[in-house]
Amino acid sequence: MSENIYVGVDLGGTAIKVGICNHEGELLHTYEGPTEKEKGTDTVIDNIVKYVRLIVEQSPYSWDQLVGVGAGVAGFTDLRAGVILLAPNIGFRDVPIRAILEERLGKTIRIDNDANVAALGEAWSGAGKGVNDCVCYTLGTGVGGGIILNGKIYQGFAGLAGEIGHISVVPDLEAIQCGCGKMGCLETVSSATGIVRMAVEAVERGDQTSLSSIEQITAKDIFDAAKAGDEVSIRIINRAAFYLGKSMAAIAATLNPERFIIGGGVSKAGDILFSKIREVFAELTPAPLQQGVEIIPAKLGNDAGIVGAAGLLLR
Image (tube, rainbow, N blue to C red):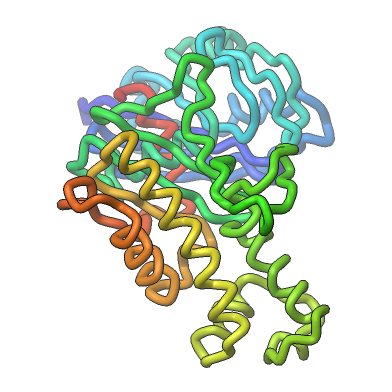
């Protein structure tokens, strides 16, 4: 085999996932090992190096075919310097990860935040394949985002572009404080955390809902109840979808992407969520700005971060 390969690293608090991709973004091999963050920064870096070498050794490819390694991490990064400024989930602070890995592996290294690399993965070989301009949402504990323009991650002057979850969309009278310290962020109503919060508040108010019988309410419980016709759950989902659609209308007027891609655990709710988002987007977006625009679910699931990290070497 003479083709070049690219390794992506998804650096998580519990596990480090690595994968080999070819030039087309096809995921060829994967490996996962423990992060062991409790043992300190040096151990985590040792594990990254070990897993990258191991996956190549276990593959049909040679080390010489490896062009480089890309890594995605949840946290604040200085992309130009290749330094992870703060990544609480792995205990990194001011770690010059690019320089260290280039010295240890002898290969080109690229880093970016996890939301950006997930967006790049979807754009490269997932739901955004063949589309030059798309915006990706990740709906999980929070609301993450990534912007792909002309096939490349748009990072902004400080590398902080794509913080979609912190667009202020909720009116003042309804707004609550977000974890970022500001009021009315999208994350407060459209993340799994926000959806569960609204459900708990409804139960505490005494609203008539089947959720009252559940001790620890999850986002899945709420979506299941909504699909079964529970009016409170439907109202909560519609509110979350409304603000997602509203944020997309604002982004459409600013960036005019061809496609919005929604991933993360909450996106698995399916049509009960997507149909409302599309309806709101159509209501709030001027006709020329919604012409040809699609709002679709992500395709790569948990592999998006690995694929996108590998794609940093090419895009």
